[in-house]
Image (cartoon, rainbow, N blue to C red):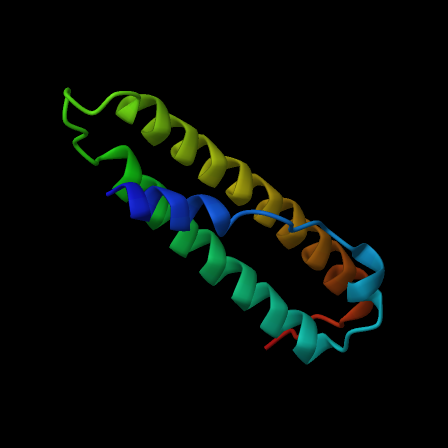
Length: 101
């Protein structure tokens, strides 16, 4: 269980939003990036739910604090991913024509 907390915790380090990166992308690339972000948000939310629903034994010192810290870290990662998603949506709205099919 502790290994799960450590692996999940390390997965959310070091991601920032870079709008300039998206300006150079084509519409299909933006769509693909948007799909990848949506997948990452779903995956992170599932992980956060699993962590939040984990039963930590009372005899494990600090177990509930670790559980809360990991869930909070995953929430912060979801927030960063949503910012990235919003950036991609804004660039795509300005750059890509809408189809009226």
